[in-house]
Amino acid sequence: MNILVTGGAGYIGSHTCIALLEAGHSVIIADNLCNSKSETVMKIMDIADKEVTFCEIDVTDAEAVDIIFRNYKVDGVIHFAGLKAVGESVDKPLDYYYNNIVSTLVLAKACQEYGVNRFVFSSSATVYGDDKVPFVETMDLLPTTNPYGETKAMSERILTDITNANPDFSVSLLRYFNPVGAHWSGLIGETPNGIPNNLMPYVTQVAKGKLKSLRVFGNDYLTVDGTGVRDYIHVVDLANGHVAALENLTEGVHIYNLGTGKGTSVLELVKAFEEANDIEVPYEIVDRRPGDIASCYADASKAKRELGWEANLDIISMCRDAWRFEKNYTDFVESK
Image (cartoon, rainbow, N blue to C red):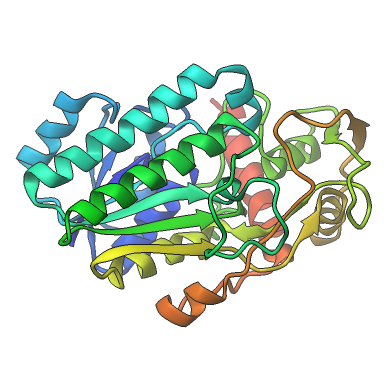
């Protein structure tokens, strides 16, 4: 199949492009490069040893999206493009609502106009709000704790309504948890602009000496050590989950958690990183971050049962691969 991957030069998108190419699919990447780099597209092709089509566009631009659908045969869409920082969404809600909701509307409309009936949406565990863990797909969408989560929940509702009104349309809503790690080659990984919002790239940059110490947001949660607990999943496992969802997509709306089913605290991850890479990560405890919840981890049994997918890579692999990429990427940048 020819798959349009929006945000395909980003962290999760790039790994999914590789997984798609390795599975025999063709890839069209649409990305505005607001939080990614064009060199990643070349690295995707180097790793997979296959060509991809790259379109530098913003998918909130309906005319630019229409040109892609007119010029290329699109068999399915995997929609990653969107702003994604929980804390930033609290400070800039308008940017998040506009970018994340409009992009979904534009793509869904283009799919209807051009008869594209396969749509995989990059959702998030934040749609569950602050509910009991583990999170299960049958839980209701709750008022979330931040605008980022609200945009994901709203997009899910939009796509569900469109599917209910169009029986031929097929949607897979993938609620995934905390992707970390990098491709084993060390060529692609997470490359945030500025100070990272996500934990693992913050850890790797502190380990490298680019940042003085890791800020741990709160140590007074009701968790094993007071720090936030999350379900960390290797980005390669996550990418394979998208391919499984696409290839097993049938008519209707399908919802899947993509996670390991195991919660790991911030300090537990720091310890695992230190053990995996024999390096110290200094940290300091600071106030809680707006929009964060205490614990978040998945019941991922449905994906295993219906898609034949499950996470295989452990936290040590995540830490080793993330560090390998950080060393390779930073050394490349510093040598320029």
